[in-house]
Length: 345
View 1: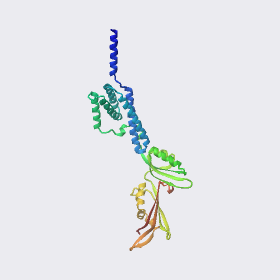
View 2 (view 1 turned 180 degrees about the vertical axis):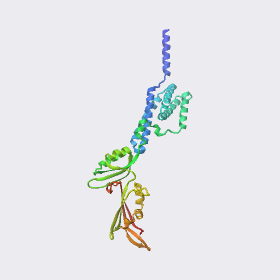
View 3 (view 1 turned 45 degrees about the horizontal axis):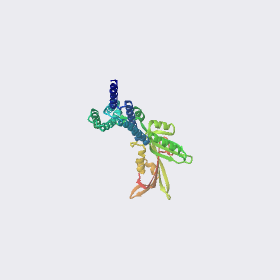
View 4 (view 1 turned 180 degrees about the horizontal axis):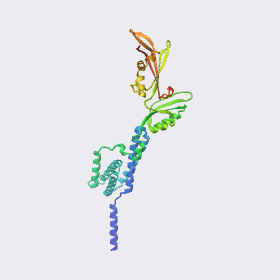
């Protein structure tokens, strides 16, 4: 009789163990958190790459995400019965309620569970129906905004509201370009964008000037180390106009331009000097600085009209910060315009 009872107990134990769930709740929840963290990291680096162009960090985040997804997929693949899948589903639903990031992560996990449920031929059971509804509902909704898939630490790091400003740094470097190379590494690391640069070559050391945009805290750090200033549409320019040739001799005049309150044009920006001045400098100076311009032209009569001739015109443009000089320019260009006639006054 005792043997029969023992046999029955052993049978029940074996039977129970056969149908026991293979689900490890703690391990599964840790895998969920790791996967959510990896998704957040990818979104953080995708946001940063637009500013920093740091593809290496994004590649590392994607690799980490793939590993986290494979680890979670391995756990789901080990589930061998409907009860295990149901427990995993319930844990996923509880996890999804904590944040939009968790909910997005849960959507991806539900797809894995649904595939496993179909493989086990339990798609007619309640758990599979719940998975169908969950997946269909989320597919019909719009995708989650990327910023909502960032964890708090990522939101702090990305500093979405950090202002971006324009600044100039300048320094003297040797032929080895050591300081130039170090500065370019800093620019790359912090996502600074170079607008223009100019190197004034000198035997004692090249004067290197960079005009760039960056987050305010980066500019503050750079200006604490390099000479320079913040730019706020207050750039100035020197425009040297040279006329004449070998036989008649050469004449030149340097015009200094800068923003004034009375100016109707948006003066003081690099784009303004490149489009307004370089496009037709003689026409601009004829309209705004005729007396100075006339000192380097020669008077002629063409078809009965009095004209000023500027022979073999060459123009050189330097743009620099308001308290600097041509030697510290952030932009330099040379133009050859040939012979130009304008109406004499």
